[in-house]
Amino acid sequence: MSLKGATALVRLAQNPRCEVLGAMVMQEGPETRFFERVVGTPYDREYGERQSSKRRGTQFERNAYAGDARLLREALAPMVGLQPDDIRVRNLLDDYPGTKDDARVARLRITRRLLADSLAGRAAPHLIIQPQLLVPTKPGPRPYFFIAPDVLVWMQQFGLYVPADLKSFVVRENEVSRADLARVRLQLGAQSLALMHEYDHVSGGKTVVPATGLLIFSHPNGLRPHAPRTEDLRGAREAVRLGIEAFLRHRRRIDGLRAGAEPYTVTTDLVPHFEEACLAQCVMSEWCRSSVAGRTRDLGDSAGQLLGNIELARVTGLLLGTTMAASDAEQAIAAELQRIANEYGVRAA
Image 1 (cartoon, rainbow, N blue to C red):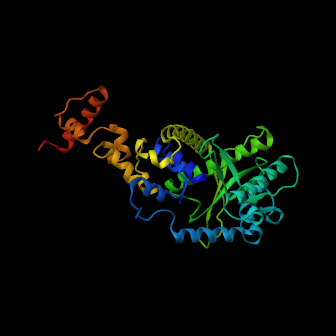
Image 2: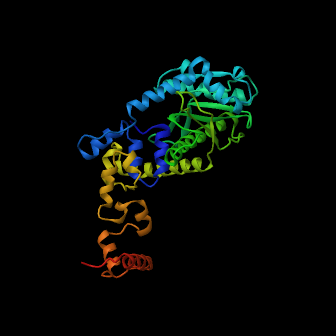
Image 3: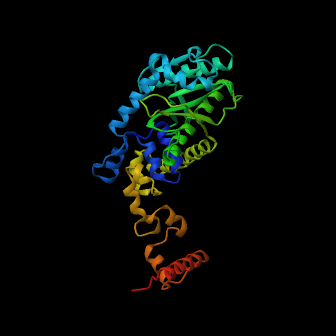
């Protein structure tokens, strides 16, 4: 799996301080290849979405789009404000299938034309399936990110399109785990930012895009769409925007270091930012974790936030009173650690 599109923006939003992640986004090819070129050995662990999950997602989308998106029209009719049979649908993969850049550019042109038609009051589809959007990142390596929502939905409430994402994992009463919801909100946030750019492109900045997106999960009984869940994307859009700003900073520094070489070649000169979440989503997690070995951040995010990134041996000294605090912050840490030590009867061996 390579870091492109919304996936890259979500990862940058989740960990904007990691320069190594910035190099991975700049580097062409899959993440595992980046690991191999930096570490010098093949990546031998399971990584990426499981094939069973991919098959389920593909089947869920196929069901939703079948029969001129009959199931989607039924699920989204309340949002559009029309009866399912009156909802117009356009699937851009029917016009230009594939993932190559020329097909993406062709779908982008169609999407822009449809947005312009809708704003001008001309006939336009209420559902645009597999549209193509774009987020620019200024001239330089990776000057833009292609963003492809599953669907753009024209909502009667706004008179504008909003992004919608189909997720095949089963939910009951539209309740989703906090971790899953945070990730998919960021995906919608990236899509909403891209939609803002496209509306600006066709309207000259006169269109205010609502910070709203729709999540469509799978119904427990069969792979069919659940009632859409409306999400407030203000926080997600801001997180993705900050992630893009971080990428631009990382890109400037990496470009200055690599002098025309490939981004992976300067990885050892970059500053990683290891977090617990990296272990579940980044091939470089163990490599980056080595930068905090023997320090409090290796104990987890909470320990790092509470104690800073000081050496564990120093923490032990502060706890036992054998090390003098070097600052007011360390004095406060030492007092709290000693209180805990006394409460639990911790003594020096």
